[in-house]
Image 1 (cartoon, rainbow, N blue to C red):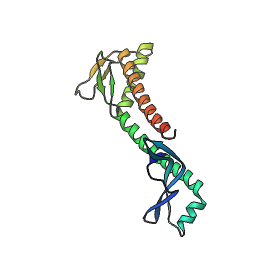
Image 2: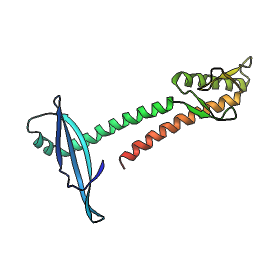
Image 3: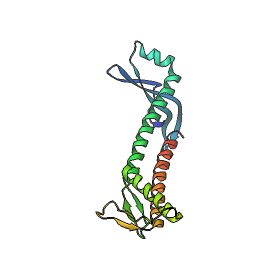
Image 4: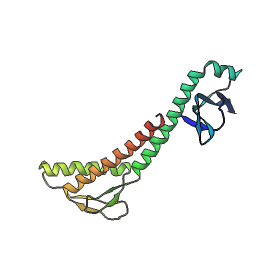
Length: 182
């Protein structure tokens, strides 16, 4: 990860030891830049977590590139998990649809996603004429106690808005992940 400092960074910084696990900062590609009459150092820095061992400094120096790559992988995995959890939380937090003619917030929890998918399927079957009897379509918003009646087209729009919400949340997480390693 690109970092800047006014202090020349050490190549390795052996930090804390916790339950036999050592935290180490690794630095490479140090470039000195002049900014407003002050020297700034820009460099790649990564934190790696490894098992404690004898003569750890020599081990780190001898295996610097492999450990740097390991640190990048550890960082990427941690960020991926954070972004995935954030994405899932946003997906499940509700979405806005104007399928009823005005913006309303609908629940996008797993159970409601399945319900909306079932309603969309029913609406499509209703429209195709494959249903022997037109099914009544009802669903509720996140803040309402009762259900609203929906036309087939309104339910299909609700399903498309849910899909757009999920896709937008996933794209946001993917963009955050791709920006990490520019």
